Image (cartoon, helix red, strand yellow):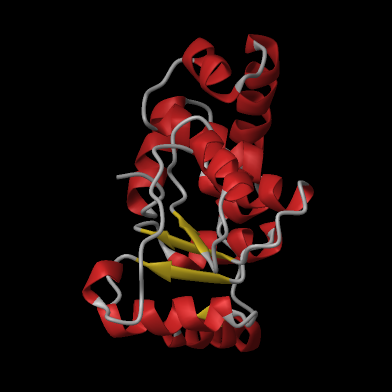
Length: 191
């Protein structure tokens, strides 16, 4: 989509979060764009790592995952913007230009959704109570991954992932992974 705009140039593409960090150290970019579901280091953790390493390139998270569930997490991590992949090219270009100028970007639909929630007194969804790492583990469990597979993927010990699983099930008031899977599908947290 970015290549369709005469005002944009894709300077580099990488396959995972760790390669993104290496590319950001090596290059001179106006904006970096990442998804949430990246191999080896997910997009939210990538943004946190970039900020921790003081790489001063603004981030736009561009993902298929729902804004209402992931935009605030991305912004809290240090991204300047969040946009879903169903956006039109013009909106993507505008979002990139906004973030490149050092300003925040969220879609008008997210602004409306947030405004409605603030004034409505609506309860939050159970997954809103999860930390970013707990949400990562919950999504992996919902995809049917074993505790060992998740531990290997996230570079954690099996006992740490088991502890996360116990906490997640407790916070979500659930007893089995299959309940997490149904919940995650219903709420668009996994594809």
